[in-house]
Image 1 (cartoon, rainbow, N blue to C red):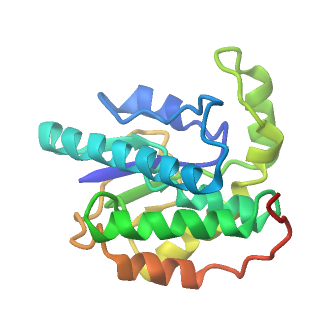
Image 2 (cartoon, rainbow, N blue to C red):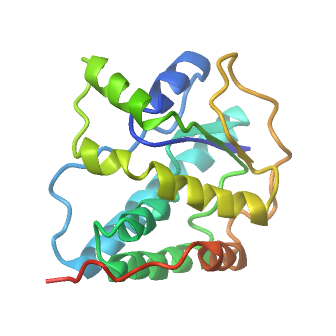
Length: 206
């Protein structure tokens, strides 16, 4: 079983994992040295996703259940940025291409269960302001991703009911659904993308 703990910035993902989970796959921290070339950047994010997915598989073999602080399948970020007009649509399309290939060869997939916390924007801002343990880069942009992230997982929930749970339970790990057999199904990935609201071409690449 692979379980993802997801939500917008300051949703409490890491705090929840630290409180209720033993070992878990940590969230990827951007270095600021990511490739500038758009094609290389798409491949970079695919490698990051595949590496975290491999960590989840290793943890699953060791512990039976692997928890991930944010989804190894980070394609929703590129889609959300494009949906908000904060990044080119072409960037998402490039990442989709390399993600589909990673699915096809079994190196990336959907988690069996996804716990999504969606605090209101005011709550996210308050948590950001009172959290002295970490800096949240680009918070103003990232907090806007709350709505696209909800749209992404709503689409997945409609396609595969029971896979998504809409809370980070205060009482700890909830009852989990049965493991899926279609983790790496390219067909499910394509159906998810097709079910999303259409993207606008609001930002052009240099």
